Image (tube, rainbow, N blue to C red; front, side, top):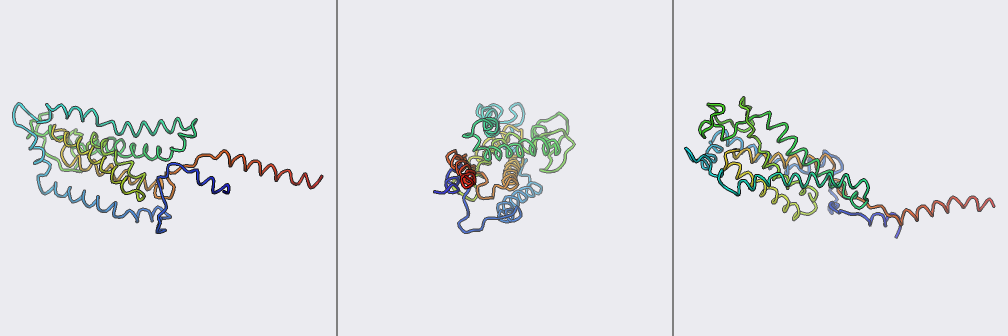
Length: 288
């Protein structure tokens, strides 16, 4: 086996595979075009749902279902499982983000860990871009949408007279309802799906299902406790999905071998050094 063939055989983390049809994109523009349906279908669905929230009382009807007038307030306020999910909600982001940081730091001294740096870099960027930057740092304080439990209809009186505000509509109330930060941390389980994007449909479906299910479960309890509207949860899912897809495209995850690393082949390095040394001695031997 040649040196080049041996080096290629040492690849680890085979998370990407060449398209057997030879249709792999060569530019970012081509990659975006290939993902047009992965972009358009979720986007149109989100916009249609948002339009529905403007013409029908979707959010308010859902929230009214979990609100009891008078002393009892919101149903989920007394549920132990709601407190459990509230406490567990940051775990996905912590696991993926902290795990990625550990790989990047330890990888500076450990070649075995360093080969996983492309995966760690992608996961860290996905966590930072979605839940931390877009959801909690930019959109939530900018929109300032009041929470259901702040509305006068649901017993809110700080401040008084607060009414429903539709999704993406700016509010003068100091609210932090849109989108849901806790649900976004659950939805971040979708991020690993992009490591297998267009290579392993089963893995993609598994990670997307896990992320949607975990985020939806957290979102359900956040709605039932009066902390969020249904549209807060839906858009939290959409933002995390699109931020993960954007990171995948921008870091070149669509390139063959983007999340695949090469371990150094010490045997080949020694062979190459020996060949170089032998070639360097040949002129001296001829001169003698």
